[in-house]
Amino acid sequence: MPFSRSSGILLHPTSFPSRFGIGDLGLEAYKFIDFLEKSYQKIWQVLPLGPTGYGNSPYMCYSAMAGNPLLISPEKLLDEGLLAEEDFANLPAFPADTIDFERVTPIKIELLKKACENFKTKASPIQQKEFAGFCDSKAYWLDNYALFMAIKDAQDGASWHTWEPELAKREPEALDRAQRQLTTSIFYYKFIQYQFFRQWSELKSYANMRDIEIIGDIPIYVSHDSADVWAHPETFRLDEKTGEAALMAGVPPDYFSATGQLWGNPVYNWEELQKQDFKWWVQRFEAMLDYVDIIRIDHFRGFEAYWAVKQGEETAINGEWIEAPGEELFDAIKQKLGKLPVLAEDLGVITPEVEALRDKYEFPGMKVLQFAFGSDPGNPFLPFNYPRNAVVYTGTHDNDTTVGWFNTSGDSEKQNLLLYLGCIGPEGIHWDLIRLALSSIANQAIIPLQDILGLGNEARMNFPSKAEGNWAWCYQPEVLTEEIGDRLKILTQLYGRAPRRE
Image 1 (cartoon, helix red, strand yellow):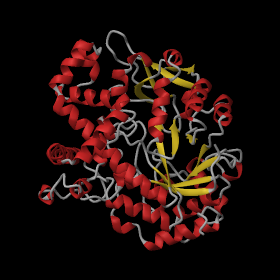
Image 2 (tube, rainbow, N blue to C red):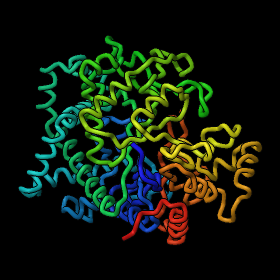
Image 3 (cartoon, rainbow, N blue to C red):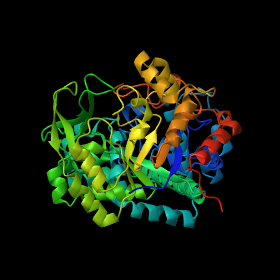
């Protein structure tokens, strides 16, 4: 569906300042929303919010529907009386502008477990009732997730397909036995989801009251080592003997990698999903719309045709395109949930068939300015080629920052950009591209915070195909200055993207 003319900022919550070494849903998140409001932004875009696994990637989570426990604010748990100030007494000095996940995670988990134990003894009858209601309402995914994580802990973190066969194959007697033996752990995993969604709901309400909408992100695929694949193996293309992915997801060689990107996720068994009237996908969209206003579908082209690589391949070169039932899927979701507020990440190898699928449902596509200046005037990423029903970015989480990109671009690309702009303004190349995005006819313009701050490639969020060292950038509270907010506000007003004030 087309959206009104607006603009916003791309920032994952892990990047907020925090004395706990990783951004969370506490005070700094609210300060960021205040910054959005004061600078006349109407959108906050986040990356997937799920519980991350190896590599800390939000695109490889243990659940497609659960929240990341590392985003829970200990200070809000303190306000609830579930933690005490002395629990924070021995916090180490964490790095200022990066997340040390190996140090952060055990400290954060220890605090969450302490809060869980306190909840058992201190929760009021109202809190207990609220918790029980949450568990009931989310049972369709929460029960599987909590059991999955509890077993995973008991198995020292091993992937589910290596568990004892009766657990890996979910034999009822084995599951009943695990439920009885792991009661404490199962309660803990339900408790932290309750806290995550409680804190997130409060933050979202705060944003919505200020007319700021949140764009969430649905990765098309889920991690092989996830509660979803374990609980619903029939809906994925798995090796029946080993449980491993028989066909792996990825993309062929592209802008980011000469050997393509081999993600390793299992692709879907679309025939089985069709038999179920796409129930799992409907539930996934329904769950997502519980806590965001707009959904960005990552790798949208995979709903028309997807790149599948056979088990055993080490790169994505030797794959094949296989058609997917995208129209049937979106028709089923639309029938159940109504017209969807969806953005389509339509980057990569895009065919007329992909464009037709996107346009049938009026999903806005994405335009990235960093891709605009490497070819000729027919380049679809040049602003004069945009349709109105589109979202323009200076760059995405997969790109370098604008400053980093410009500094490492080739002479030809730089020359094309300079000819297009006429000159580089005194405020820097990042503000030139921000101005270009905001002035375009695209209905929505979204700028990564790193570009608003004018940071270089040290602030890059992700290097596609690089397994480690990503997702760790964070900022300090003093960088969101009034001067930067005012500059953004002036441009937002100038180009007709500001909210209407009564």
